[in-house]
Amino acid sequence: MSQAPLSLRLRLVLQLLGIAAVLAILLYFTVRTIAEQAAEATHDGVLGAATLAIAERLQGGDSGVGIDLPYEAFSILGSISADRVFYRIEAAGKTLTGYADLPLPPRTGASVAPVFYTAPYRDTQVRIAAVKRTVLVARVAVPVLVVVAQTQLGQDAIAQRVARRAALVGLGSFILAAVLSLLTTGSVLRPINRLAEAVGRRGPQDLRAVDHPTPAELRPLVSALNGFIARLRGALSRTETFIAEAAHHIRTPLATVRARAEIALRQAGSEDSRETLRAVIRAVEESSRSAGQLLDHATVVYRSDRLADEHVDLSALIARLVMAIEPIAELRDLTIMVAGVENKIVVRGDPPLIESAVRNLLDNAIKYSAQETQIDIGVEKKGKTARIELCDRGRGLAGQRQSRLTGRFQRGENSGDVVGSGLGLTIVEEVAAAHAGRFELTEREGGGTCARLFLPLV
Image (tube, rainbow, N blue to C red; front, side, top):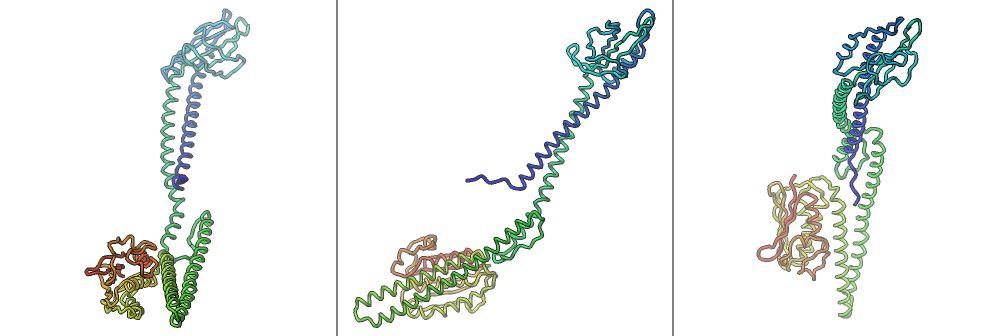
């Protein structure tokens, strides 16, 4: 089986969260880089100012280069952080004072502004500023290089504080983006949910085109849905027409064949011919009944998902069906006793399906009842349901479960000599299920069967 794809909501949330995470990471590194550059620029400014202050104290004379170290410059460097400070003053390639091993700048040229660079010194990284000045010694220009270095512990501490704050800013931005992603996802999917609710509220018979305001992106979906509904409406209409035409084109020829066979039976001269014609009549009757019940079952299956929502008077329905079937019952010397039809009992449902269920119950009772017995049918209210009860003095259930007898094309073990298709009780149970009712079969005390059909009242 193929794995189910992720929902649109989850996809959007994951994509938006991924974008938010990337932006939060970029924000973190951007803030950290800018902060480090700003801290470095600040330290370079202070370090350069201290170096220039020292360079401005250089003095030339007849005996050499003199300098009065401005200790306030070192105080300024020490006030920013607890870093170590190193310096070196070199004239004509000779260190005059300071740390002789302090790294010199990679390039030495005439420069008014300090030159900044980073180099390893005494097991640590130091930031160095170098300024070159020219001093007259005995009227000779002597180049003097002033180099001041400072460790970067304070700068690193500032960078770490900024990094932590940048991380907090990035995390806060991600959380805010996550919340906005959820809100945005809900807002984007809301038109789809509204469209689904509008379609879901429709009844099974409502096959109109969907006319719901939707964004432009959903219009292709609505157009495809309307096309499907139109094709479904056409297919259902053709199915209904086919069922009706099939019922007519199957039953009419069978009835003609049976009528001609009965005429031939009356005119037959030999017993063998009459026996053959009786077999033909029985086969035609069985085929006619099977075809009728197959078409009834097809109608039930077709209409179960498209039930008509109408009021059905069960009392009038039962009285009409009993009147129509009484001639068949009289041929077998059966008496049909009806009770409860004087009271109007109304249920909500599909009239053709309910009529088909009751007709199949009556048909079964007549088929399986012994001659010169009575069939009792009644209708009454039971709480919020109407109960149709039909009891006969037939062969009973023979110990068989209802689930087997109501299965498609399943017949009782004691019904082999009775014409039937095994669909009558199936139709009754499916009609009950389609109307949120129920169907029961029980043995009747004294012999026979009781069938009860429960349907919700209006």
